[in-house]
Image (cartoon, rainbow, N blue to C red):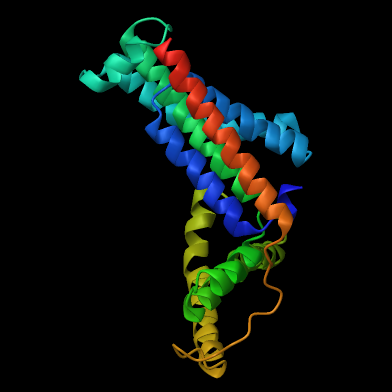
Length: 248
């Protein structure tokens, strides 16, 4: 469901949740953000709960650094400790550390919702049509989207060619020495691709201010308006409940 929505309203909503997670220093709000993002992926996008849990792992490791810094190597911040003291989760330093820990996960899950439900090509086209992204930048981003997987395929081709010359199958995971030896040929391949892309951009006449047509750009629909209103309402309710419970 979320994958069918327009990328730009979805981007604005996800950014609003991230900004709110940064500004609202309350553990309950961070947990609510994580729950909303997880439910959106599991219920609306039919993603596996194990995938959602796996997505939390790198953000949890990042947030664990905040937690240990707050608890073990902290320099007391009057605002953080004052707000954390109002949260009944142990000592103020531990409460502040927990809030920072779950804030990292909340921001990461909000960004994961956007990344997992948005087609990069559709996002670039929407930016070019609705937010006047310069065509030079848009075409360069399209080239980057194609170059990244092409680099992976080129690396595999080089590894297979080397394995055939040596008469033994390639390793499943390349070692450090092999990775270093792949830098120069992959860099040469990327330079050749960059030269061809520059010629293609010149041939397409990507001059600033020239009129052009973007085909296949996503259009705003009523579903996007309904999604934006509902998501904004849920965010507002979560903020109000967080401040109400803190005041109580």
